[in-house]
Length: 178
Image 1: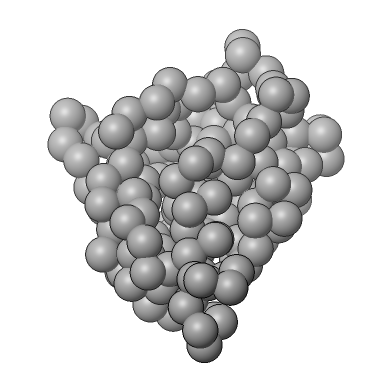
Image 2: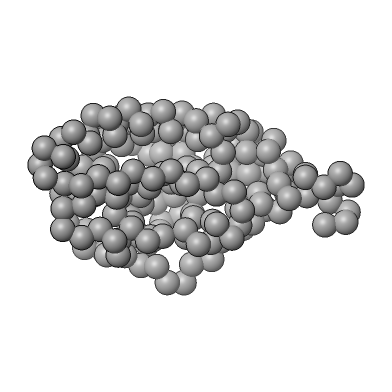
């Protein structure tokens, strides 16, 4: 599945001013999901390399990780797909492509699609370091003409299904009472 999206933020675009780089990593699960775990590791490695360069250039760097534990948290952050990486409030990907994610499907007991990253004509469940480094640098140094569009957000059906399934799975009686 592929969707074109408007740049959407949780809060970073309003906070990023002057020489500030805000990198947000939003994910469903970094204990079980191979995509989220792998992306977390790659993003940490990229940030370890880029952060000193940003500091050298006079930028303040803020690096946050947020687990989308509930639908309410996902809505608050205008969460589109897992995993998501934003720089100064803007998703580093211009579109969302997804494929079935066995790990997140197991967590929720439902069929869940998670993000695949498109880079140089290939799809990756875990983004390559080069892709993330390039996307982060472009987000900071290339003027974004579309700006931030935080209006008209609705939690995608795929994520609604994930959170509902996860909640139902907690209940010992199954989904019949919830």
